[in-house]
Image (tube, rainbow, N blue to C red; front, side, top):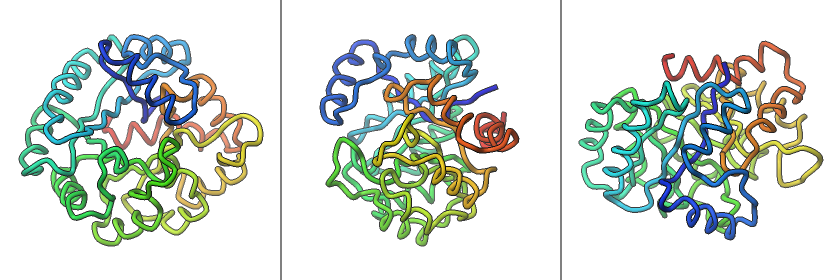
Amino acid sequence: MIIDFHAHTFPDAIAARAVAALAASSGISPFSDGRVSSLSAAARDAGISLTLNLPVATRPGQWRSMARTGKDMNETAGAAGLVSFAGIHPWDEEPEKILDVLKDMGFKGIKLHPVFQDTAVDDPRTLRILRGAAERDMIVTIHGGMDISFPDRRECSWEHILSMLEKVPPKKLVLAHMGAWGQWKEAERFLGTPGLWLDTSFCLVSGNNPNFLSKEQFVRMVRLHGTDRILFGTDSPWSSLGGSVELIRSSGLDEVEIDRILSGNARALLGI
């Protein structure tokens, strides 16, 4: 069983427009059109049994429509192989009440993206959500490090992440992109933090690319943090699903470590 802990989809009506806009800003060609049906089919082809959709609320109040879409996805997870977290915006009023609604709807976690939400990870509004989620035993996944589309934005740079971890010790916190995209050496400052997971999305590529992790540095980070708290992620539609699996398998980790990353750790965190 392989679990992809980090993927993105968009409603069919806006998928083409959304993916095109993100491709233009990042300079990256997508591997999919961003639709649910396309991700489901690609996951099956890659041998991925379960994929986690991570919606990003880019404005306050958007959590309602995202919750409806995510609930529908979760109710058909057996057929499509997709489940969803919920979205919430740091500027939403009374986030604790929203988290109560989301938990009652069956969501196991939420996704935050500080750059797209224009709010730093250690901003009091973000910290309030982190505390509320921890009190409700909900997982929080946050984009970590720089964003390839907005290289000058620092809302989730390693300095802000360190500040966040000091102010709200994590319970079930997942930092995407091995902690801090493009700042992986600095991310070693918080490797091993209790209650913190890292996902592997959009970190490894075939060949030598100085903008991405080398296999040697990836293996070093995995073992420094602990192989029981690393989660496989593809960041679909921005990475090949099968290619992402193969990069983990060929990274230099042993079979026990690979099995944990591709499946066991996600099963444990999700309670599967």
